Image (spheres, one colour):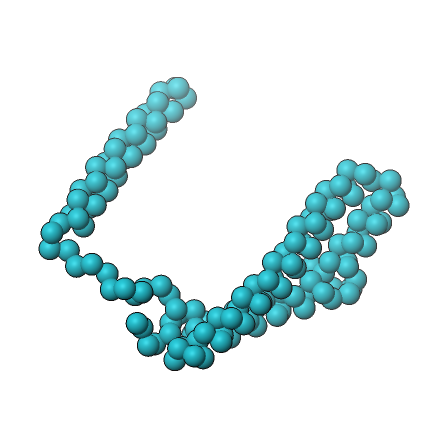
Length: 138
């Protein structure tokens, strides 16, 4: 009974995929019609939306960095996770220490990535100030 059900499910999935592939081909052919309008140069790159969201993104990055840089008493901080790794090593729990060390490495790389994003976002802020918050499209 289970073999029949899995076979039916497989066939239904293949039929659905075939229908979607056929409709996608027809849609792309319709887009390539001679009457289609080409997109304007530089349009729709999301500059206006990014300029609008820049202050919120900046606050979110600051909040994450503040949490990561906090002391041992703050959940989610690098210092707290380092303390947990040290405690696991002292207790002789090597498997736990290895697992936590992997998380610590990931968290430290996240911290570096957030600092890089903060620098990139400063460039976006400068660009937005010079270009009327992305409203003046060229």
